Length: 263
Picture 1: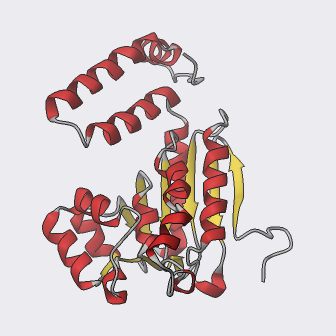
Picture 2 (picture 1 turned 90 degrees about the vertical axis):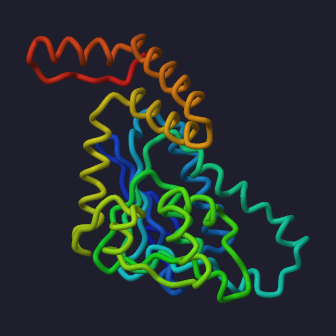
């Protein structure tokens, strides 16, 4: 049953001080990703990406499950052509291409599509109960929303192969050790800590933050020399922003800067 105030399975829980919080709320299915949840996520991210007042986004789920995986009932008997015609990649793109910094606040299970969803974010704050994994192999499948590619980039070949080929679950502590999450907090502090990080980032020059995100993601797939050129050009471009001048002036004058996110 949906709450009367929030009839959707994905909703904007709050927007304050530049930080938007999106919540996935499908507890009867442990927040499993079905077509409707994917569509609503895409709509929210597409909308928030266009709003200047939004400087950071927090994505969260429930107390016991961030997202426990894809909804198996939606693809159990599907044909290859049916899967192709769904074009689910079009629903993942607004998250992958969101220019705003995105922080996942993860409690409980983040499995399959849930792990992939968390890896679409820029930072992951995990509660102590968090469990990550790509168990698709146990269904005769493999990840299909970036799991093989993002996981190996996050933790390296040998850890990624273990997780992908065995379908094992990884604890929050193990995920932190291998570089899959940014930090761990107690379960009751997960969302609060993610919001605090988002507020910290939101208070900084938004154009610089967006350029950092764009350069890191684009440069990861380039040869080092090409990535360094990309970094250099982005660095130089920021000298044309009002926030750069304000930041330098505030440093010299020993005062708190007043960043406006202006070019």
